[in-house]
Length: 391
Image (cartoon, rainbow, N blue to C red):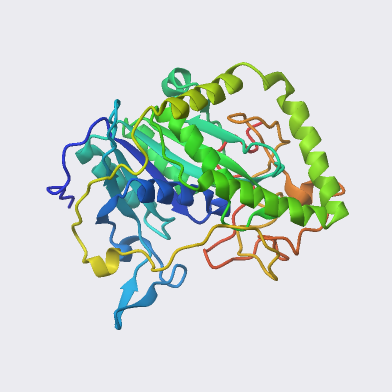
């Protein structure tokens, strides 16, 4: 049963969702929603029952101390509301959680119930995939939808993907069948440096979201973090001539593919974004959000204590699993076409002749197809994105 007595009436609400796990390479998508929640000071107003959707042997609860009292954080999905003021007020319903282990249809129906009660006009689901994209170039972000009319009116790709899918694809289809406009935004993360965080991909997702919903998003330190991340990866690449040569090959392929698109709409979008930020349009950074908390006690709703410092890529002994090496399994990926918002595909090192060995790079794995701490391994090109076998 959904009770939203404590949530005020919203203004043109948009639901923005991201899920950790299979569709979240480099944690780019979940970090984007976390950024929105942090910058606009959203507070949780609801959490789905963890018992209904999660296998605790796959996603384990964590125990932590609060003033000497032991408390538990359960893996689940939480919803918060942020009230965004300014000349064009538009409220956001943020959905942030972990890809569920079971009962996906019930999971989506529950989220759609919240969307209906809150009067949500558009659902935007964020995702990230591993791809043959160089870290030195702008992060490609593709916008896809299952709604042909929405694709025309919002200048999006109409997805034609067929194959294994994640919760992002299931939720988008559930929205379409329920008559709720839904869009998925996908960022391509370099497969050779896939360990989270990836602030450059997170920044790209937020920029595309900003254009999509016509709302200025305060970026905080994210732009500086993205520059630091790229500098760190540049330094790693410079230490290995084989990797540097491979990155140069990706750059040449990307630049060739993007040459016809180097003017026109892409430049216009960047110029419009520059003007918005220069003129101070939209809500002021740091504008507070508003929400109330209901349902479970705060003990079970609170996020795990502790924050993550500014990301700087390092060469760990073993990176966190983000799925198998691209091209090793899942759907068949195509050849990269590049370009933000395009239908880029990826093959990864397994499908790229002469590709160097990235086993000692951040996020690399020696056993494609193995399971990591976040659950089953993920194929490189995320399902439901245009970066897949539909080409």
